[in-house]
Image (cartoon, rainbow, N blue to C red; front, side, top):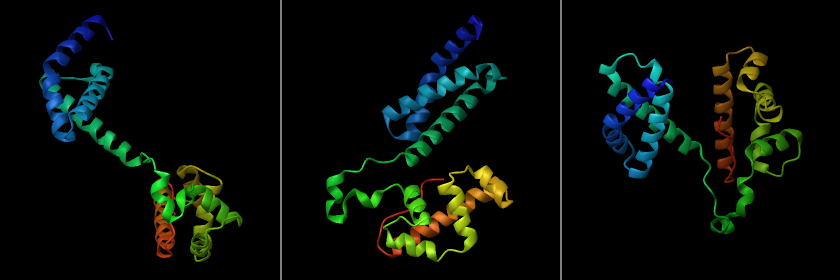
Length: 184
């Protein structure tokens, strides 16, 4: 960015920061997180400042960026794996019950699992579903490639893998054993 654009952005930053921080604080309900969201939003705004067409709509543009950063942050939080305190699960079988689901599925498909609930759930599956599991968790193919192999769109492949994971998770939980599928 040119020096003139840098100065222009600095003026926008100084003028708009309080307003954007207050907006982020209302979204986050947390000053520290609002600070992080606001800083990330201004970093994104700086990188895209050349694309901003109208100064009249500048605050709306910045507020949209703040909102998008907030949404992205919340999505990341949902995906983040929480640390598990091993001692809190000592009575429930320890951390073994939280083993890597992809590894459990792969072991079950190759006959090496010791999880009877998963084995029972897999035996009830149709051959097409087993093929889908093989592609997704043993061959570890991306959804686009799975879609090509099955003759469906990427979104349909993603949905099928997700629905199959939900089905297996329910089948395993019925037998009171933990398990599940990785986030897809």
